[in-house]
Amino acid sequence: MTRRVLIITHEWREQAVTAARQVAEHLRSLGIEPVYTLEDDPARQPELVLVMGGDGTLLRAAEMVRGRDIPLIGVNLGHVGFLAEADPDGVGEVVQRIADRDYSVEERMTIDVEVQTPSGECHEGWAINEATIEKVDRSGVIELALGVDGRGLSTFGCDAIVIATPTGSTAYAFSGGGPVVWPDVEALLVVPIAAHALFARPLVAGPSSVLSVEVLERNLSHGDVWCDGRRSLPAPVGSHIDVRRGREPVRLARLEHTPFSGRLVAKFNLPVTGWRGGRRDP
Image (cartoon, rainbow, N blue to C red; front, side, top):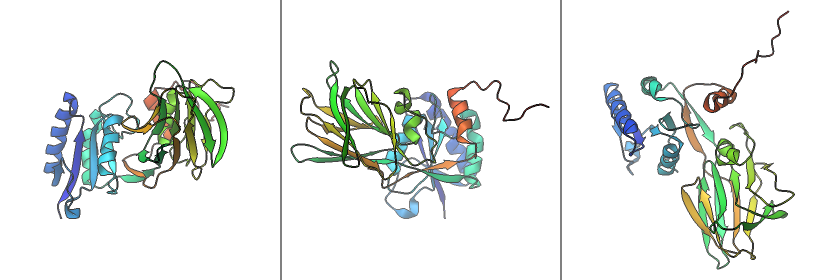
């Protein structure tokens, strides 16, 4: 049976397009067919998606293969590239490891989002990193009520509320002052952005919790719910938004078993001078 790898690239970045061509040639030399579109025929389904770009390109790739149980592996051609597995100088090794099936696959938790509008409409979405309830009118704040597991918790005006997965804890939630959560921890994060309230600190809830946000009637303008900053759901005044653990995880292929702490240090260029690993000279 012919082996296939789906290549997805950042089409407007010349470096990514050039790298994708080189990867395709390398795959063919190893007896693997590079493909650029998904087909409905299960027999022609790729075994892996190789993403050439930044985290945004990987998020787009995850949308494309959602529901197909195909793992993704990223080569970072963007900025931080927290979801990527390798940098451009390591792309040759990535292709060889794919050919050798020398990689592991881990599942990352997602979130499902449901918006119930006052008119009875229901809008659904999902995210790998975060769902953000945001104001549309940039001149003021959006008034929101936050609840957990069917109980009200706090009400405040803010610029937004970010509800994130552990994977998303290093993205928008981190920029908003939220904690970094290891990806193997199953949890839901709540991070209010620029909130006017005494109790509006970041929260971490269990994976079985349902986080709810209501767009209060006293708002003059409606809100929007953004999923991974890519897909929006309307949230007019009076809407009720539920966010819960997603039904479908995202599968990421991994080449190395570097601890997450090592990835943090590398991606954020953290200073570790003085660290001695707990050892002390006699």
